[in-house]
Image (cartoon, rainbow, N blue to C red; front, side):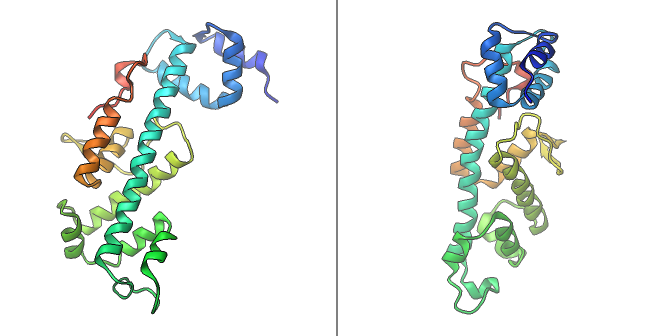
Length: 216
């Protein structure tokens, strides 16, 4: 059972709470473990933490997730579009008389990756023109699939860690910045530009430690 007195006491030892009733309601709505996680993230970047700090950081994470969700969806549609626009069912070794459009519409992200595995490297390069080998392309898209699962399941993503590492300005990283940089590289230019603008203004009017704000 949710012991609001005990949980409130745990937080009061660590943060300044301006409205205890509202904070208990907040814990009940968001989940104690989730808000503790938010606290641990912000406490690593700020010495004196308040309940407002926690709310602002959670709000920032939520804004990020909403923007990322939108562009992950756009990227998935884009992957489907390239298969639909450039191939017929037989090219992808599907069953005879398979309707490619309906097959793609009902395909999971994993199945889309499996279809791209059937395409030769030269064709992948001609379709996307981003100077990646087929192996590297598949690695990056598979990393997007893992990240997509975290975003679509509404995980707190500011402390996200990938199983893969990506290069950013001659550095390699497995954190959220690295995964977002990977998505930016894979998106078509028109989408990547608007995505960067959205990400860069997500922290507007929120009080967040600069070290936690993501900018590109």
